[in-house]
Image 1 (tube, rainbow, N blue to C red):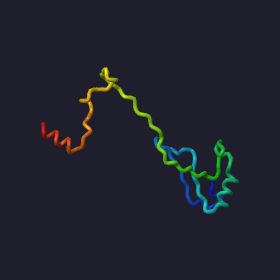
Image 2: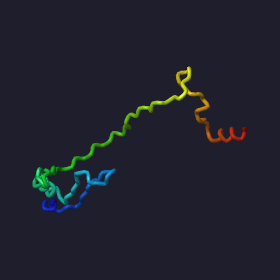
Image 3: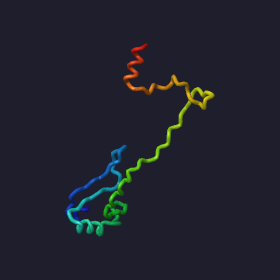
Length: 109
């Protein structure tokens, strides 16, 4: 239908990740700016199968600032609360030493 406004170079129909169905919009690239403007003029707010089309020039996606979203720590669960603020005994923790130290401890056993 949009080919009536000009030569279409590229068409992209994004699909939903879970269902694989189209998400309800598309990106159409025309060979010239004049053809794209003609498509907007002719097809914006046109009713097709009971629904109005919204045809406009795509906006560039804003650049990311590079800051990561703030993540809150997960709440911990202590099955055996103790008198030292709820910290479990040290035997529950894995050692944080180097691999070399781990090998040495295994050999000494």
